Image (cartoon, rainbow, N blue to C red; front, side):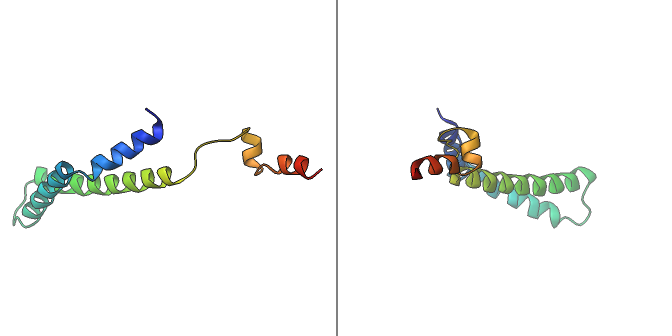
Length: 94
């Protein structure tokens, strides 16, 4: 399976109903723990780590979408790609 197909499959899984359900449950747990008058240290840690997890998951999704949207297929040598294939254009003009 190609790398791009793996990225697309992962993005599809991020939008699956099972993950949405899990994240919904996590959101409910966060709200319950935040509303607690005298939370224990572990409960505060759970809330903090949960927010970090959600933020990192969103950042990962954005990076993967950006990766999927860009063209990663190199046609020719890396130097030609670096210079925009200008040497090939010069040869074609002659």
